[in-house]
Figure 1 (tube, rainbow, N blue to C red):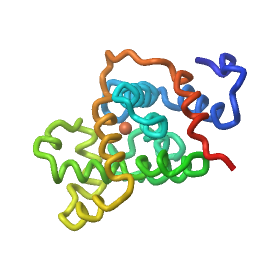
Figure 2: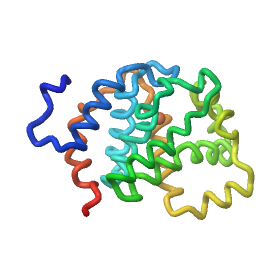
Figure 3: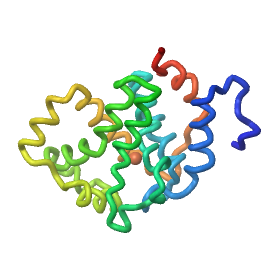
Length: 192
Ligand code: FE
C-alpha cells in the first residue's frame, strides 16, 4: 500500500503505524525468508485465529516495532549488538496503549529465554537468528530468573506471544493486509 491509499478515517497514530509498517518494514526479518511486515501480519493472524484478545492481537502485531524505530538497522544481532528492541518498542507502545499491549511486548525476549530454559525441544526449534540473538540477550534463564518471570502479571501473555512470533516466519503464509488490524488498534488505544 502507498500512503495515497491510506483509509480516510486514519488517525495520527494509525497513520504513523501504516507508515512504519508499509515503508520501513519491507526489509528481511533477521535471517528468515519473510520481511518485518509479513512477520508482523503472520504473527497477529495466528494470535487472532487462536482467539486471543484484541490487546494480545495488537501486541503480537506490533511486538517488533522497536526494530523499526531505532537507528541500528534491521539485523543488529548479526553484528553482535543486542538492540533491546523489546524495551524501545514497549516504551513507545505504552504512550498509546495500556499494559495489556505494551507489557507482553516488553517481555517477549525474556519469554524466549524462559522457554529455552524450561521447555525441552524449544531451543532446537528456534530459527538460526533467534539462536544467535539469544546469546546476546543473556542465554537461557537461571532458576531464580524463571521464578521471577512466573510472578510477572503478563508472563503468560508474553509466552503465548513468543510462540506466535516463532511460528510467523513462513514465506508461503497468506494474511490480511495491515489495515485489517486498524479497527483493533483503535479499540485498544488508551483513552485520556
Ligand atoms: Fe518477532
